[in-house]
Image (cartoon, rainbow, N blue to C red; front, side, top):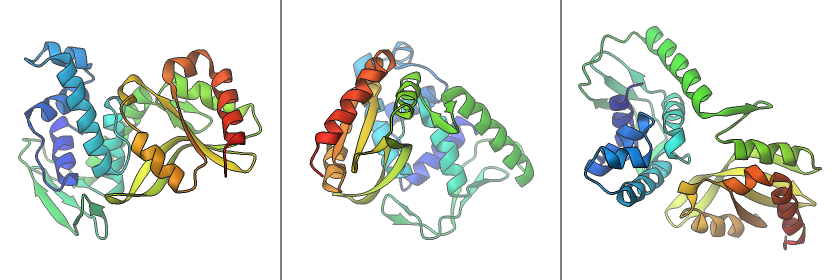
Amino acid sequence: MTVDEALTIAESALNYQNLNKIQEIVFRQSWEGRSYKEIAASTEYEYDYIKDAGAKLWKLLSKALEEKVKKDNLKSVMKRYLRRNQVNVQRNLTIEVNLSGANLSGANLSGARLFANLNEADYGQAHLDETITAETELSDSENTIDWNGFCFHSDAQVKIAETLDRTSALFMPNSQLRLTTPAGRQNQTAQFLVFHQGKLGILQVDEPEDAAEGEAVDVLAIDSGICLVKHYDATRCSEQPDLVVQEFLEILSQAQA
């Protein structure tokens, strides 16, 4: 999948809302693996402005794609969205979206067609499937870490999984939750959904770009019956996973059901 194809699919998910100039710059250069500092250095924008624009863009895309989008998982999320919604790329990039019954940002689409001239070569369906499979495997190998059949996006998450695995707690990594929000029913991802002593909690490993996110989701999760939502810095999770898990389980055991 090229960055132009990804942009076209993202804008379709956003109900055909075009990204603005700074959003497109962040999207394109993040797709190429550049950091916010590198993006700022190659443009006329300040680092803080680029980082803020990125945070807002990922939040916007997370809502539209119904999966948490971050800078380092953009390619993987787009590939999964492509597969979920059976998007077929054909010659001259006629993109046919088979979304009967699906809801994207309030728009109900059925057999909608998007057209974009990306000057690509002729795509046969067999060739496309082969390309998507190969690219997805490459992207997943670059951006995820396999642990006992589960995929994680950082060493910190793996360390927490390994530590939880040594306890008696039942846990489910990267669980998709369906919550009621002010904007309606939406999906949210719980990095570690933990069941311990009859109580359900969520342990989140926060990367630096996640620092400003999650408070509203935490309240919604607790309102929906989750006893505890606790965020831990990724650095601490990497360096002190045993203390993090011990603290989380102790707080969860004392939480009100």
